[in-house]
Image 1 (cartoon, rainbow, N blue to C red):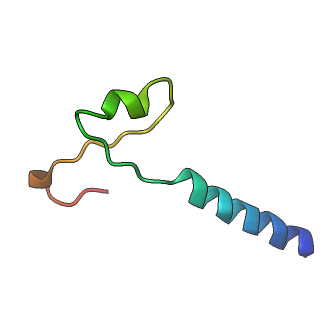
Image 2 (cartoon, rainbow, N blue to C red):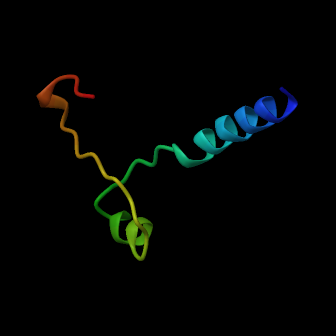
Length: 51
């Protein structure tokens, strides 16, 4: 049981660390994405709510 709790806590911490949202702008896009693997969602205010 103790192992399960430890693994659960570590998994939750990993999710918090990995799922950080970064807002990109035209002037910093290259700097923040260069040499990195990333999933980028492009959203426009006129498209409504998307998930």
